[in-house]
Image 1 (spheres, rainbow, N blue to C red):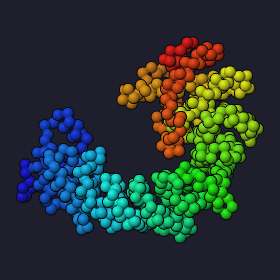
Image 2 (image 1 turned 30 degrees about the vertical axis):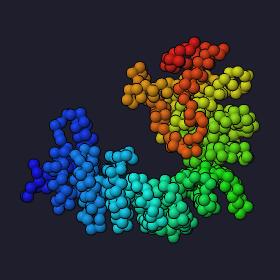
Image 3 (image 1 turned 180 degrees about the vertical axis):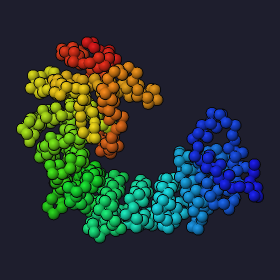
Image 4 (image 1 turned 90 degrees about the vertical axis):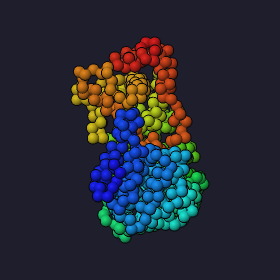
Length: 594
């Protein structure tokens, strides 16, 4: 019934809490007419009277609740009432429970009203809400500050013009927050999220370069012992990583040519700091490596002509890669080196002699044990194969591993043995496409490479290392590389078919045809396939988005390749090496000999 004098406000707060916690379930029930519940009646009898109370816990909870159900409010007037209450609750001096409810309410409003058309209703009130959130953030810390910053992050895109008008003031305030809370990685991370949102707004970029970047550079250049709010070595490392991550986003969001501050100041500072930390911190290696890649992507011509005490920007980059690939450096350094080498090859092309670096990549590959790192090294060569197969093969055949093995033979052997453990849709795709180039080449020639023998054991991942099934014999089963590549391509085609099947059945990856007798083998297969479904950061990589191979439909590419292969004289011989499951996959392509 209506709220009256003497009512127990705690009951109403409990009611609102229950509605909030079970929001999705309530929505589903209302949507499917499973309950006889009128939100309009609930609003007029419980919410509206409650919004006029002086009970902070009830008021805060009701603002959050109403915002979460904004699409079910009965009238435009009720939406305006909610927005007025929210804006009023974000004033200094408001009781904490009300303020918290309002900040959560703001977040809920933007989340619920997703489209620009729906968000029109928020435009006017954002003129009060956004400045209020900035004011509050200056006097908060801990969880409250994090909540406030999170609300700000989602509000800014709704009315970016409000922030753009005050860009200098806003950026100065945020960078001061960054320095003030430098030892709190959670808050620094939230401040960064807001700054990254501002970097999306063209009118804010100039201000970021003049007010934020100089402070970040100062932090990078400051000796560790005197840096702000230093608590421990770990905090220091985290903060420097955050600084470089932020600079990376700023650079990526800036259209070329890059402003001087990024080329003449940020690039050398990040390079110097990263080179100095190569042996100490993989976090710094990752953040520094990504920042250098951003500079190459957005300003390669500028980096190429940059002169740093007689050393060009590209020579400096090669120095960093060389140090990352040093045998003394953690193998995880090689993970970021691989990406940096790929970027350098993409933007520099043949204008740069990178033979020494490719030799270093090969040497590091011989020492790596983690398949993730091996993949990163291999992808450097795989991209080269896709770009210029003959030239890349000739180069690798002309160099050797530290043990004296032929470079090309070693790369091919290692690649084929771990291909099933590749992760990331893009890198898996470029690898499979390259294999479809190699197989016809090997089948058509008398190349000694065609006689390379490769392990055909199924691999598994244990603690980041590759292991073989304990059920298999001590000596691995060896097959010619042509057979191995064929089996890999059939397996990749099988994975694609499974993914398509899973999409049709709502993501259920179970295979009813699996043989339950060999549980361990089943687990191994699923572990290998997990890599394909888990994906990898590289799929979000800005530097690969414009690669034409991204557009290749791997399903039709493999289907066409396997169909053409079925007319080859060696096809039946290749098929004899397949197991029953692999034959079933081929039969789905409806090719001869399967």
